[in-house]
Image 1 (cartoon, helix red, strand yellow):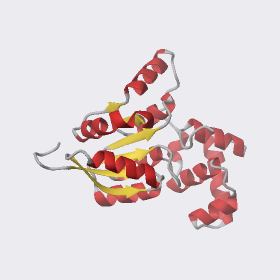
Image 2 (cartoon, rainbow, N blue to C red):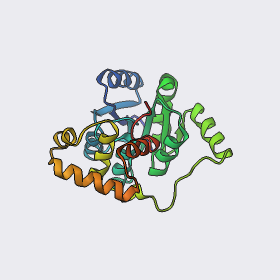
Image 3 (cartoon, rainbow, N blue to C red):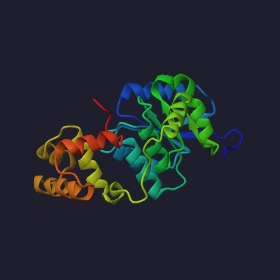
Image 4 (tube, one colour):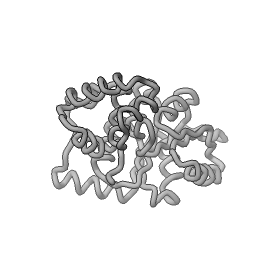
Length: 222
């Protein structure tokens, strides 16, 4: 993919300013890379990726408004050529499988960032996939033990982007009023979204929605 003397353009998406600064310094220490933009929420990451069309987007899995895996799915629906590397604190096989299922090309652990970040960006920019070695072993063990896999007809895929936002905020412990304020919609609209979430997902209580969101990797387990 890369041309001689042409820098690989990278978008950084993480909700912590100091973390983004650290990643930026690490990446820009490599003369082959150029950080062209940053995002601090999932929705901002979608917007900036579609605006900047970077060669690689580095996306934290736990993002405000909408999670990194869900943002990746939305990006790839609108821009199939996008190449995304997911960052996570968790080696949970369910997270990894979902990230790959939606189209992420890389998945690396934050505790191995010094070793893996540039390797992952370079590999993904060249059209290859990259998983942190620790993740590869966890996923292989999960497959051997018959871990859960995605289903062809996933009710989650029938949710709208706004419903996914509401689900993530519910899982973060936000009330209907708080969600309404954050999304600039009415409390009644939030209630409608909540009811549709439960109907679509076959769930009946808020606690079930929270557990579902954790299992999907929308929010990290407490």
